Image 1: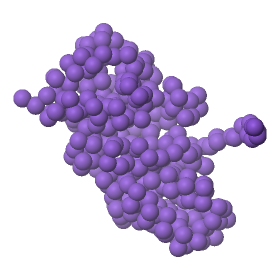
Image 2: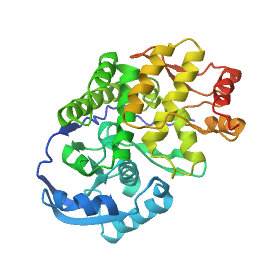
Image 3: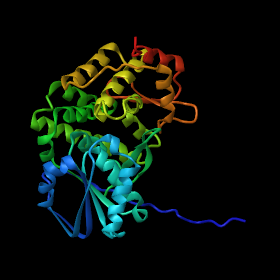
Length: 349
């Protein structure tokens, strides 16, 4: 006996990304701003001058990737219950990628889903993490292994917030910009070779190009069934590095930069990327003092950690590898000996 449940319908999750001075935001609902102590100290006053709501609450969590966990989610949810937010309420993610990921995840599970908007305050979150609806937290098995695809209702990108960004945080965002240029846009990469993103007008253009690139990819593959996985270039290696170092030694973008170099070494070994192209990519990363080397203590353990990556299948590891600059392939057919040969280049002596 079968009973069919007909749920065939199209849900429009479209939203706008505004790249400009933050406008006045008016909400006829209860609103909770989720932020951290650092961002609140620097920029909360600026936001509060531009937001109006029926009731407005501030939820402040600790700053850092190591706090992107279930304990922080429980803290956020408890605050939402205490303030009696309901299904008509709204969350505002006000911070970097960690805040955006946790706020989006909390919104996706609170009373089975309430709205949220993104107001990213770091370069990395403005060009990448705030766009596309990936939400989640880390656990002992790895990075972002618990979460949901849950799109925001809007994203507001204001370069004002970048004025207080430390040099390392800025560079971490550049790594994500490089990632998108290498995989999808050769002309964009040549722009990065030519111009200094520490100049305001060039930075604004880079943010625009990055957001346009990611928006195009996400619109074609929202749930990462194919093309969108290519945006994880550098992340397969980078996530293992983050986990090995306890999310404390490197910022996410710094780990991605090292991961890009490692992925390039594998692509070079497979004849997909020339030595000259690999050096051009390293040159752009080094211009912003991003790390490009890493010492692996146990290459077998490092290799096994790949299998916990969300992109990997039951017995296959998916690698995102550049085919030249401006093109990319998602490969799950690479032999272990080829991967181990690359890892051996980074093995502790």
